[in-house]
Image (cartoon, rainbow, N blue to C red; front, side, top):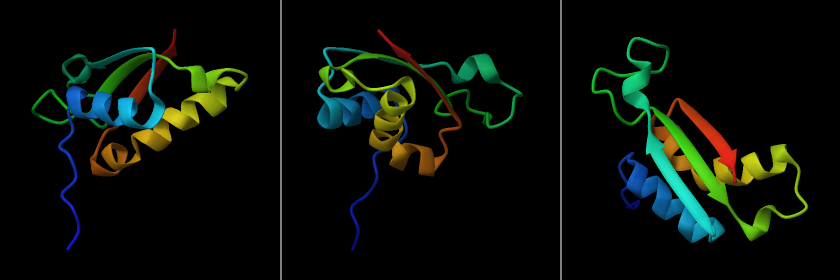
Amino acid sequence: MSAALPEISAQNMASALQQRLSPTHLEVIDESYQHAGHAGANDSGVGTHFRIRIACAGFDGKTRVARHRLVYDALQHFIDQGVHAIAIEVV
């Protein structure tokens, strides 16, 4: 029996990032409502498009692509559940 996956929400995504990357700054913003009618959007207006603002000591010395990969890896189970877009801002 497998464990239930957390539902897609900004709070649950932030929790996953906290556990995996221990960021010094983190904002996870659900911007799905701004993408109504676009590819990957759903009728609810939540849970598909997110903006992440993050600072993390683990990013030091890494390329932009490597930093983004760390974020995507931490959020893979949300992506698998239907997150369509993640805008990442390293601050």
